[in-house]
Length: 461
Image 1: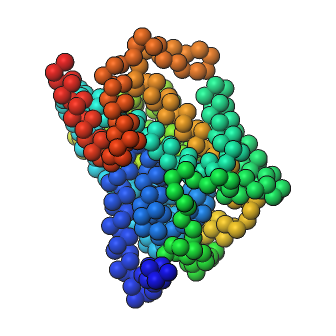
Image 2: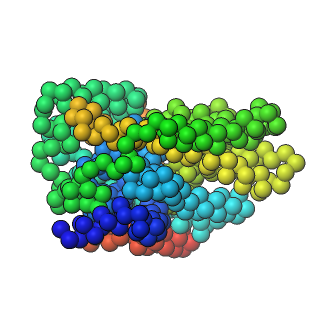
């Protein structure tokens, strides 16, 4: 009890607030550096550090924030970081958490993009990516298990996740439709008072007891700054709208609608509004439009960019930065290509991630106030269960395309050609799975070892 009181004071006391914020900044930097493996892995890292290790926020608040972020367009992992940072340390905390979450991935992919256009496909680089892809697949599976064990606490939630998996894998159902149906089922279940829809209910998590809000630094009560303030919401929303759309309008007026920078700003601003369903929904949209409609890059290059995003820290949709980099590099005009590419990457990142701050700051106070609404909470809980099924589908898709050289499509289902199995990749994947699940080795050592083995294999072969 004494520990909790001390922790609560460190966050709530104005005298100690600066110290707490500095500590939180270091924690968010650590989370960003460890956020490999796409949204499932990033959410699992945040849960492990913020809920289990630091006990700054409880299980119920964490899942409630996650449920809201699942409803928004764009990368849910970064939005979750902004939400929790804001909940703990007001606007400044949200800005720090969201910016730090993106920064390592931005720098890493920018460096890899330079290497990509300058060095091409050298055996060493191919070997590193070969090993990393197998390790990342294991990391994603491990993360799905961790997140699923928290969200799927009873057979009703497991059934919703299974139904979502079947709908998207075998029937190619649109993600928004899956979300809508899951939300309606949860809402009706919550209004009916069915226990299984209340925060997952039922059997409890698979990995240890949940951390209750009353045992955390934040406590059970709603902080004053988290209560709805219409004036604050309007001010912060106006500022963020100007910062987001101002550069887009400026490029349109000065460079014209057909300039590559204008097209990048316009396309990724549209993407930030329409891509519901998290990072993987964003990837599907970008791959279809950037490759098929805009012709900025080839399908194989899109996969290379995805490999960069999968194997570097930060949001998976940092692959959009690589797309903007190549688009500007190849249409630089009178500007030096590398300078144009760098500006294209910065512009893409700006219009992709800045709207996330707008969605959170504008809506989180009102959603947090509704945390006790049973019907809404039940709807969001059901949505989270459905998303687990969708992420499992995407993990399976990634496994099929990573471990097999040939894939055949039957109807809407991609199935591997078994004789085309990549035995070295399969062995690396099995080794990474054993390291993570059996021996509990951390992500970074597993990623590093697999990268080294992959590079050695390709160079020797």
